Length: 483
Image 1 (tube, rainbow, N blue to C red):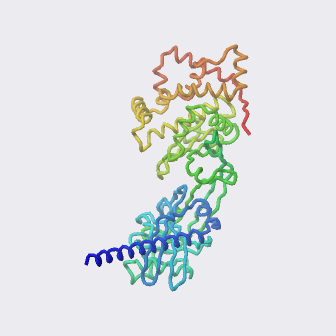
Image 2: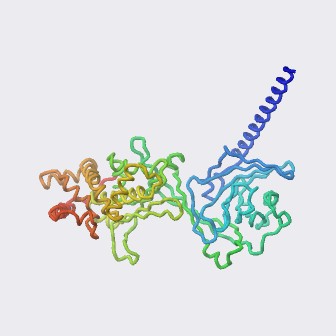
């Protein structure tokens, strides 16, 4: 009896191992099939070709009514966000293979969810609360058309034969099986123009570390996606559904994708500003590097710094300024957009131009400290205390927390990078620029608008800063860019 029991247990355990091993082998075969057959590089849709990655580790498998369905989630490396009154703001992607009557069918889905729908659940088996459109591609990039879904009921709105199997598979899991060939009349098809812009960048490195990506050029393509009206929308609203999305790619001369995904500073500067920004980032100054490191790696924030002809502080465009930094979290991308005035940069000394760029980076760093999810960091806590003390005034906070670091950064940059200009200053004045001179420069942009940290200074200190700051006009505007 004892031996019999042992034999039974061993036998069952062997069956279990065999079943697990068989399942593992099947999963590996499915992964291999998808990986080998899906040719993303052939897709004319640039967002898919250059910005989509497939999750091969997590596989969903289902069988129903002679349909064998295998699903893999896919995602964007750099998330796009739609600007639409009708649609949810983020695209979803999924890879599906179906075997029916011993014949395989493979699809890549680009999923557009209606505004009031639930989020796409990343499976066609649970769509009872989902409404939207599935833009469907073959594995070699052919656009097969679109399927409309209303509360889990699918309809081949493109009326393409290639979509019949996928449409039927979705409807297998619909709670309303008697309605599988119907979609409510309000879901009349229409075409939505979807525009994708790909920005190409080249990398800048220092001591083996990626510092930034420099803008090279952009390409724009428009894709017509067949959609359906949501039941609570009027046809007249379609005009507001124009969407745009931007992805960033490394280009032919750039870094590998893994490096690019981790970098969060995108450089669209031109001319003198671009040159000085590169010199500033490559100077090795610890203050600049430590500050910019906060936007690299796994940062929740990103910076895009760009040159524009002129920057204004008012909507009427009557007050011209050196630059501006804006923080926008409305679409959960945590973007910080810096605009630098080419007109102002070209008109001032190179060291002053470097100060302007540094000033805007500091604004971005303050936004990071204010809006980060990690409130425990010491620098974040210190900033919040000062920010509250000075009634949430950014320039007062910058004056208290950053002026000394800016002073030291400008001093090192002037002496070690803008060396010709530094030597001319010494030759002209017979002495090296003082720390007070660089501190006066650091106060640039902080002495206006009744900034409390400035108005609180003693009168003699303010007079000294004003006097020293005027010496900036004697510095040279010329600059030498690295190759």
